[in-house]
Image (cartoon, rainbow, N blue to C red; front, side, top):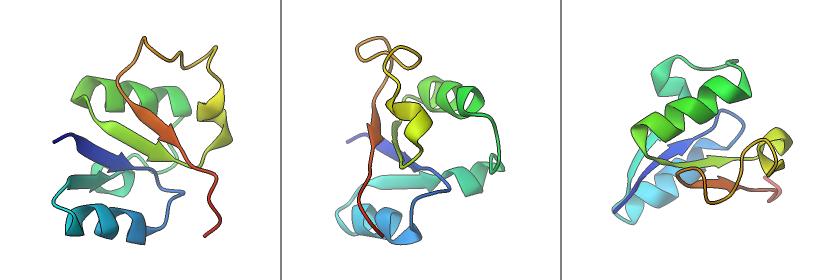
Length: 80
């Protein structure tokens, strides 16, 4: 099962829900990456081979963060 990394803009309940379902979850907050540039966070998630969950619109740019050339990331625009 993949490891998930939750961005700082997502509610903590996102991680709790995944953990309740048996997933390994970390938060950007756990790695002292709060406020880091998108590129640094993206590279971190790629290096760790995690599924990155974010609501940051910047990550929805498929020219900058191409689908198929990266490990997984998930852009969420759900209301909190």
